Length: 318
Image 1 (cartoon, helix red, strand yellow):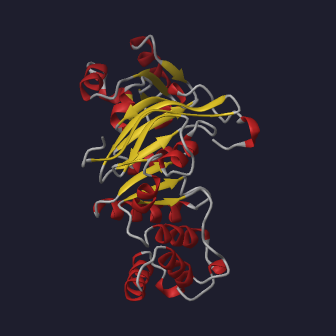
Image 2 (cartoon, helix red, strand yellow):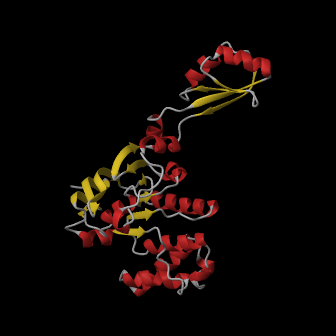
Image 3 (cartoon, helix red, strand yellow):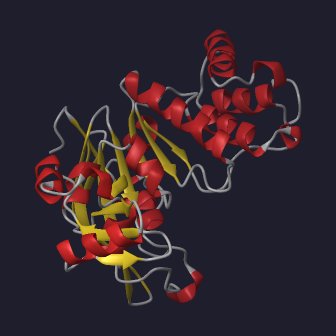
């Protein structure tokens, strides 16, 4: 049973195509009012997972409850509770921005007065009011993505699925969409996000799951995941060649770079270790220090088996 504080609960969900298991026993829980990011290489099963949770595909096994409802037995209730923004825009280029939103209001059976109010509010919130009566075909990629997300929100869902929503957007448009997601979560909306942008997950997500080969191979907060992977280092820049040689002698395991006058040492990122490392080093011997800890790139590479997608049999995108 999904609790009031859980927007999504998944236990042992599986899905296969032509004998190829795309989702292989996934378990996860998403607290209400949070952002959950699902990472993974192409073909890992991210989109299939979203399709199952949004009732577009039935699972072969396991149980999934979304907004408190079973995705198989109560699919209509699930659909009435969620919004979905897929990888490809649902915007109709022949309609204006206002008309696209009004169409969604009609499909959601909003009354005329309520529909008008909701459409105007969304146009303002998503900074589309000035272009509301232009055909969507004239919109930039970022504007179309904002309109697409606004269309998802017309019916007022408290849980939305964003399947790689910023793919193809420029950095400014991506950050604008991130700001909108933060506003939604601040209002109590739950967001289930799939993405291949590790920075996106790092900035937005309360919890992150890493999917590979249809299995959840790691899960936690960004900080928890980063602690799973060693790989931090500190780089010391020597004052001159003679001081570089001194540092190399002092730190036998260091990697020297004579042209850059630097030595690189393994480091866990803690202040205590850094102080111990520098104890006794002459202040005049070094002119700079750079510290790097493991990031989500390191986590991703460490816990996934393949850098890019394996093709899914039958031409089905996972």
